[in-house]
Length: 135
Image (cartoon, rainbow, N blue to C red; front, side, top):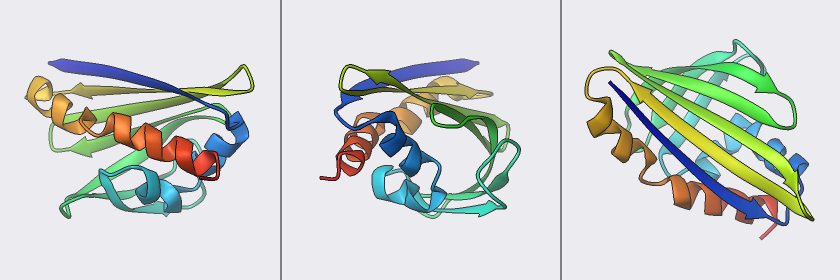
């Protein structure tokens, strides 16, 4: 079973401002309402792993699988037989940037879990943009 959801937003902030927030895992809880805390072993880069504490106290191991500095990263959380991949992409657009986050949930119950995982995606993007714009 697979669930997939994509959400996009534009901002007047440059891609570098968005990347600065994304590459600082200590800031994720500031813009993502689903995240309480992130503990990363080592520096932010491909293969780096750690533990993400989700709102409500659930802890999930995660790995940063893809890093294209300044433009993209993909992280994968594992919760039992479920895998949650979140692909973050920022590209220049006009005087700012376009941000797209694609979430893919695979495993048993993905179609039920997916909507819960992506429910706060619009809020997360709005908070990310506000921080990137210095609001």
